[in-house]
Amino acid sequence: MRNIKSLMAVAFVATLAGCLQNDAERGVAGAAAGALIADATDNSALTGALLGGAAGVYCDNMGVCR
Image (cartoon, rainbow, N blue to C red):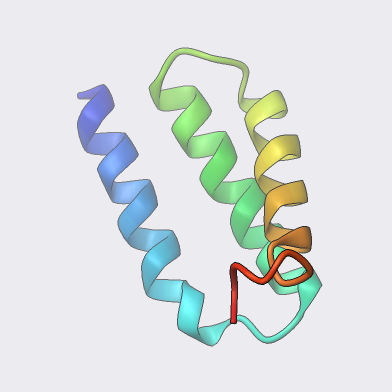
């Protein structure tokens, strides 16, 4: 069950990746994905959301989201 949730979260974020235009949108998507993946792996959803949101906001600055 945990693997299904993780795969669904990754598929959801990958689907939205082409629609994201700015840092705020990428941050929200990253936070949602981080929370879902952390919850699915029995970790803190809040910590996952914080890390995912930060990764979403800064991925463009690092050249990952081009």
